[in-house]
Length: 186
Length: 428
Image (cartoon, rainbow over all chains, first blue to last red):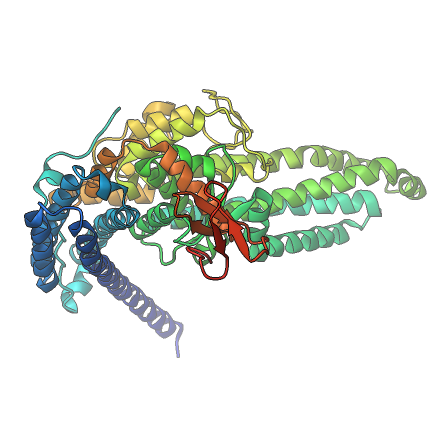
């Protein structure tokens, strides 16, 4: 066996190694997207679980706000049955809005605001809301990372060869949130 | 984000190697000076042993040790839901795989730090003063900064460097002491040898090294610490997408005149703001553990609307007047590529600032209820110390210490007696 054969084999081995690495980096990016999505899912479920408790607590104090409470319950039911990224985004956006108006209305009920149970639930929902926002942010970051890999040289060759498809971003439809970013210089 | 950890690792390895070289040369000269010619190798051996022992202590017991030194109490979710939730939020935002342990330090000075050998063993500690003073957004900024330290692997790196600094100080201290008090005898015995000339040279180099090494080691340690503070600030801005939160928190921390009770020079670089030095100095010396806080605040405030590493870097250059980037080049390049790539407009649209919609609502309901926060924090400390809570019918809350061993407790206000076996609420 001549030295040239060995060099040839080494080059082939090197190329295969690089290809494997590129392929693995694509798989890793795609798994990160999946993982981030399941994180959103966990938080959305948690919010759905918290809502019956909240409505139950609020009901005793807010007798005249039947409409607001019903809107929350309805939005929750729709969101629970939503399917796919786009539809889920829309339904969860509605739920967020319904909750927001519930908490806004709650300001008029000092007894409710003093209720320890309600305060604890409010903290939990606030945090869940934030967690949804942050997991959405993490999801979109990882989608962007993955999509970039699908488009950019050299990983795009591998992506085409093994049929890696681009993922869609997750949007929650909250008009106000899009319109004005919260900037407070006080 | 991943690139920062990666490029950090390369630079960290370089600094660690530098420190190790310093440590070994200190060991060598100590050996030569104390044990006579040829003792250098033994000196290196001793330095190595000291280093290995200190490192393994730091590695496996460091977190516990540090928490004991600074007086941290580990808490669970029930003890302080708000803090716990904020940490969870930042873990999600930073895509860490595990929630760090959370500790509260009972200290009125507002401060925080992160420690641990890796992501799975990380811990975050905040003081009660911090919890009392900061609102939710500000707390989030601080926690994100600490999570940034965890994510960028700063905690392990600073532990390693800190241990080596400690070893160098220890060895030089030892050498200087025994050289001045006991070294004379040994030297006079070997001085008749022909290698006298060489020995004098070694002696001179040795003494210079002894004096300089601890100083050099400290400069390396503190320089690394300063740089990592900026990086953690930028990570915080990116995780929260709201740099103003951290900026305001830093402002509040900086302008409180309370000093921390339990700190020293080695633990100081770990905190978000140096607990020892309470000067809002503009200049930054070689021996500062942290960049000037006013500068950090200005950089955060100068970031544009949608925070990313480029904006932080631009703001950093503008404020410090430095031409060198603070963010590793590889990371900047990928962000620039993202900006130019067609997917950029999508990004801007789909990643809005995650304004905490309900948090905003909740905050307008209770405008900065500081007393409420103070109660929440003190309760957390009591609960963490295993106190039992009893809600009396008169509205008072009885806090029973774990060492209280009588069967009943009497409310001080209304004199109602409660049996401790049945009436326990929130007890653990």
